[in-house]
Amino acid sequence: MVFKFILCLLLGMFAWAKEVIPTPLTPSKRYSINLMTENDGYINPYIDEYYTAGTQIGFSTKEFDLSKNKAMKWASYLGFFNKSPRVTRFGISLAQDIYTPSLKNRKLDHLHDNHPYGGYLRVNLNAYNRHKTFMELFTLSLGTTGRASLAAQTQQLIHKWGHYPQFSWDTQIKNEFIVELHYQLLKKVPLLTTRFFSMELMPGFNVELGNARDYFQLGSLFRAGYNLDADYGVNKINTAFDGGMPYSDKFSIYFFVGAFGRFQPLNIFIQGNSPETRGIAHLEYFVYSSEIGAAMMWHGFRVAFTITDISKTFQSQPKHHQIGTLELNFAF
Image 1: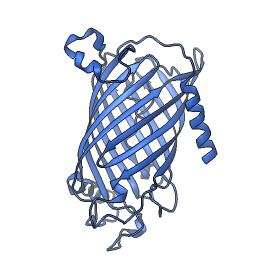
Image 2: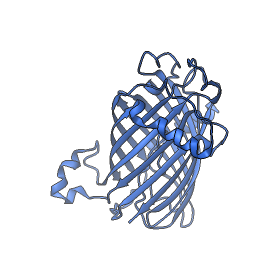
Image 3: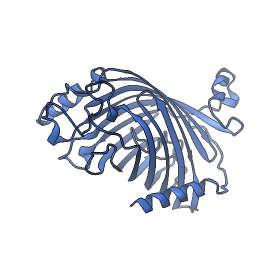
Image 4: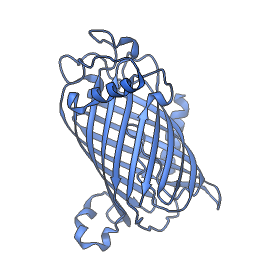
């Protein structure tokens, strides 16, 4: 498994330097609403632990050619490739993450060697720069952890509807105002292009800095299907890459696989942020994940499902963890 992961990363980084033929930039005139839900219960209904659920609702503007818009010239400086032709889209989303210990440990008065209870409620402000063969993403996240994140209330409400056991959230991480900055660079490298079937690699990296999570991630996606020049892949709430919104009205269908490696020196959702939560779990600094999924879109509508396998995120975690991601995108 580790060999395959390393091989995928090497192929992705090699492909980054490969010469490609650029495609014309045509700004999408559609606005988008994006809905996402992640849950380990989508893969195994009998588990409910660690990173157990994520929910996000977002809105994105149409794409702007800032070189022709004097009123928005200030936004043209948001990027590291200002001399490269591009179109820009802005977005805002509201997201919530929920973290819990393993089921067998939730009745303990004092957790040890397990994932702390935690929640993260935030607003994400996004700017997508789509170039001819690559895309940049800038994100500013502002939010809160602890009781103010409403994670306990959300899980208890869902468990009440489903008649599942209720557990106390008294030991969750404390309230803390969170500021996070995120940058991502993702590149398209065509491998095969025909009228009805295409294949491509999409190597990339992202980095996040703030007072909740610090990490640097490398990875690569392999996609195969019909009309891959419709988007930069699907979105995720907490892992892998964000592909943004579709930019073509043409019908597209594809499947994908990916592998990612992450170095994370800080993650308060595992390390804790108070005397009561620090030391419950010890962070794994190197985490890797793999994913497989499929997506279909037409006229800006997109439906996608992804299965993600995540390696141990804390040292005493007994095994990998799997989550499922369902994404719906509506355009108008």
